Image 1 (cartoon, rainbow, N blue to C red):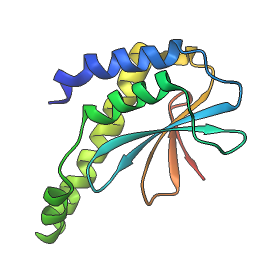
Image 2 (cartoon, rainbow, N blue to C red):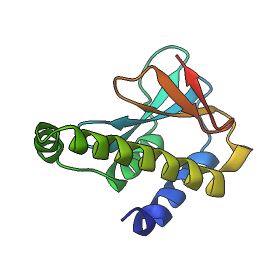
Image 3 (tube, one colour):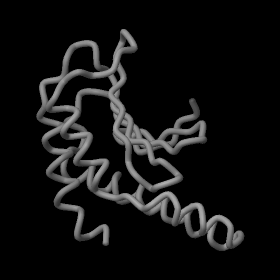
Image 4 (tube, rainbow, N blue to C red):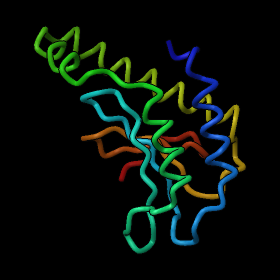
Length: 136
């Protein structure tokens, strides 16, 4: 499934990389929502405000729509036991690796802002430039 979506993700990441960011934005975080496996893109700014940049919001929407599972499905899976929870965690790990590999192929170190991958409810972030986990 992810292979079929790589081109869409890669194109969106390249648009993001080529975007002229407002000066106040210094960091982009791709956060996995554990309840839906959806990638939510956050643009962090120095003044703490949300981005009003229409193009950035459109790129974020495209990335968010690349992968999504109905939260009810995830919720029901969690009720079936540890094996299901392990499979969800494995899926999140796979999404992280896919995002990081696509990022490396399409954007590399050309991105001028900090870019990370994170999960809801975790205190670590994966730095896409250094390719290392960081504790918040």
